[in-house]
Image 1 (tube, protein in one colour):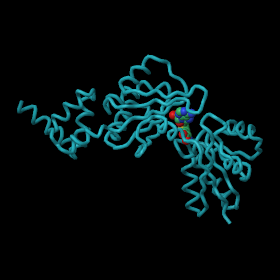
Image 2 (tube, helix red, strand yellow; image 1 turned 30 degrees about the horizontal axis):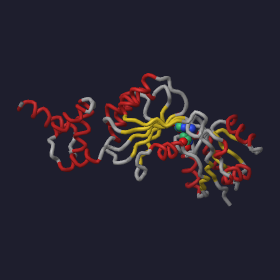
Image 3 (cartoon, rainbow, N blue to C red; image 1 turned 180 degrees about the vertical axis):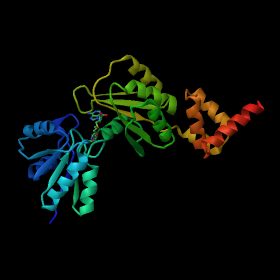
Image 4 (spheres, rainbow, N blue to C red; image 1 turned 90 degrees about the vertical axis):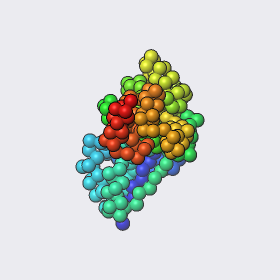
Length: 281
Ligand code: SAM
């Protein structure tokens, strides 16, 4: 009989958010695989749980997955936890989940906090459809490309961000996505919890001047419906659309890329149309 693997969510800042089922599971399993044994050790101490811990983090995920699979094959049950929130959400767990499925072991979720869900519901932005993009790339060019790739998704966009990159990311969001409504949700469930609402322009301005600390989720509105309608009705030509995006503060390269996508054209073709238009003028 194979063991069961439990993916146990832990609090994202407020220990009172741990669920009774999480505590019962952590107390009952044979082994807990966690990102940082000291960090999880403190959590378990707080709740008076004594359990064997093994480290399972991004640097040993591959090797540990094989070991954990052996435990499962011996019929032992395992809980996987990350430092905070839900395992496998911008945290390790995916590999052992895939391996468990491969060997036929049962995978059970013990749900709880995930920072992006809390950020979404406090943001006041539409919750009917959302896109969670994890961390934005740290390199400027890659970040701008990622933003350009998601710019037309008709959903509220959510990203995890670090305090030292927030200002740069907001600037890129403004330039690539245009001046949308957004929210910076910081230190959720903690003492200094705050959610700052504003346009991307206002938030860029605010956070370029203040020294921000703590953990952050960036929430950004979808493109306005009117944008999509104008694209669909095709009232504008491609060069007009590029010019319009440029007036919204999006630089030419990304404006062209986005317009090409909206018109369903390869970028080279969009570029050719733009050049032809220039020659005519
Ligand atoms: N597994 C976690 C989850 O379920 O949300 C995410 C882990 S990821 C390594 C850590 C990032 O999540 C932080 O850098 C921050 O962007 C976000 N985060 C975690 N806790 C948060 C909090 N209390 N308030 C705001 N953002 C938080």
